[in-house]
Length: 282
Image (cartoon, rainbow, N blue to C red; front, side, top):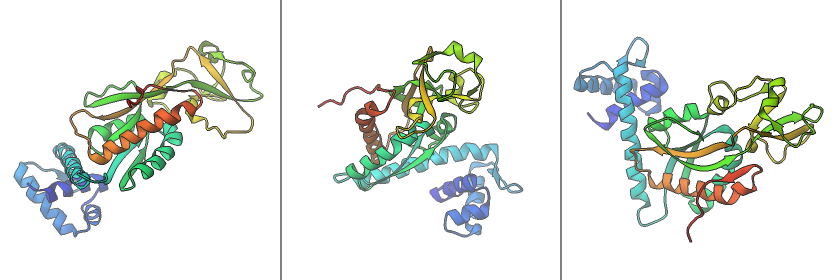
């Protein structure tokens, strides 16, 4: 078994066919086929269903391990490249959409100033999508909604934010300084998508009024809209998650440190956000 065989298997899993995998690996299809055949012979199992170009159940198991191996190899190269000099390399960071709007631009700006040789690849998705990618080694870290139930992942709470009702200025609740959650049963609400972590915390109907995290409402939002705090709805907690058994690479550590610094310094400037990180030691 060698790294080229594992890379071929992961490429098929990612791209869906032998030909697409060959293109992604900058090689020819016959090389990919040969790598897979030798790998299957060594492990004693069929890893790819040739009729569909998809991995078998055994192939999925091997591919998950292969991703972890690739991740660790990338971390080794990045750590060695950063040893005794400026941190260099890339890392993949997942971020939930509502948080990404205010956090990602500031993190990328601060990262460019602090570590110009580090490249952050940002994946924006809901928590339910980010966690499997993180556990499988496709992400180095992820900013997610809390709480989570994933034994292979550890989380660090970084901030919490108030939940707000967004209504038009003509809505019956627009002139209220706050509204109780129970009162919203009489109104149709537009809520986060079913199946998302945030939606699971909000059990109500959907349409004219909207419940969203505070940072989902940009400071530049103008027009016929009014923000109304919701009493009785717990703040949303957001955390930084990483794999339990993985040692973060130097670029991943650098991005995480910058992210924490941005939350500490810029979080209090975001309406409705309360930082949970401890103060940085001097």
